[in-house]
Length: 501
Image 1 (cartoon, one colour):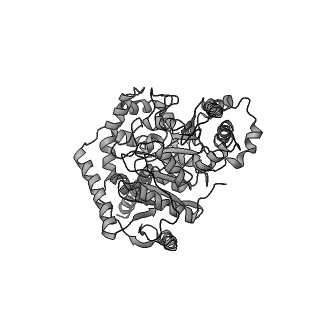
Image 2 (cartoon, rainbow, N blue to C red):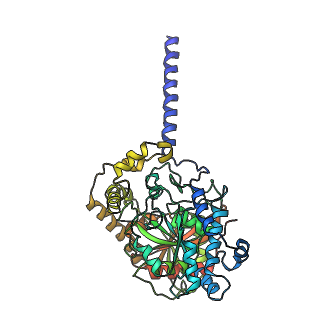
Image 3 (cartoon, rainbow, N blue to C red):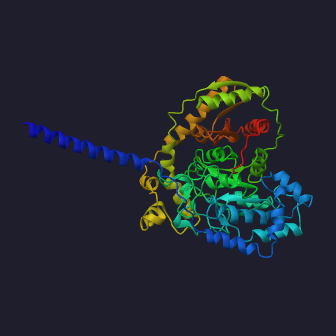
């Protein structure tokens, strides 16, 4: 009998052990993988830069750094008009920065493509200056936005060399307003709809973009990781990202830059590799609110003509959305110091099923893009099969989101209901409390702003535990002008943007 009991206990212990190990590995399979120092195709970028720097006095360009480094659009324009710098020196400065600081072995790997004609375009502005809003200003684009002279891949290996036959409308608008498209930025692959294990900022095409404040430890967040890191580390004057739910304001917050997601529908989303046309929105990631406004006005016909005033918060009623007690207390104190009336408010978003919207729309919308622009891969099914042919290179961290989207349970009416519910929750919160604006930490309830189609502006709010944080202002859909005004006031009165060392 004793032997039987010991045998049973032994078998039971073994089962528990096996079950425990299995459970451990199951949990590990759901967690995001640890970032690794991985970068691909750096030589291609460096070669494109070196060819354009032939004949350029590198030391002279570096000596002009004080006129360019971390400067705003208006400051750059002033230095160009006064003759402190030329357009070619401006462009060369950023090309040198990308080569020496971003694409070297210790760089942050934020840049994924370089416009091989960038210096020639800059030269044309030196020869014939004009007064367009962004004349000669170097701008970077997230690499899910179509350009007819550089690949558009969303970080996918399958699309790494795909060059669409026409620009996205936002790109044509930038060029019409004088901007020079300097290059493209890395992103979380497929706008972070590849796999839950995929670290933010990793793509099969370019590797891992790292956070400059604490590389490989502090996530760059995403999916617009490269655009935010490029602004933090001064790789261009301005940039564009895209947001489905938090993909502009999250990386902006953690990299101490400004992220502006406009109201949905204000900016064309045509020619952008989608997750869902129901939510996806193009918007600026910049160093200042004024730069975000200037960049926004250069990509849309729905321009916002406002006067920015640092005292705009005075007398306004602000709702701080409850998240983190220490953060909420610090934010509330600041807002009251600036003359605002502040209430802490709780917002219940538990019934907003954003994941359903993504799973409902992804296959349909991605297939539409691939077919419309004659991509080398014509469908999600083809993409999944292609990735499986070389898993280590094409899907290093898996592709669970892609595979789970192959046979969606479609319900467009439910998508519409979720969006309407979100608008009702947001509008009721603002109206019942007579708030002028809401503010939350980083991207804490970005899902509400995303599903409601509401504008957000993330403002740097210093460091907490040596990590950048952001105060994200948002309001009702269409209330962009007011949100920008109040975010600008907060930015100017705090001036807590941090520069990575």
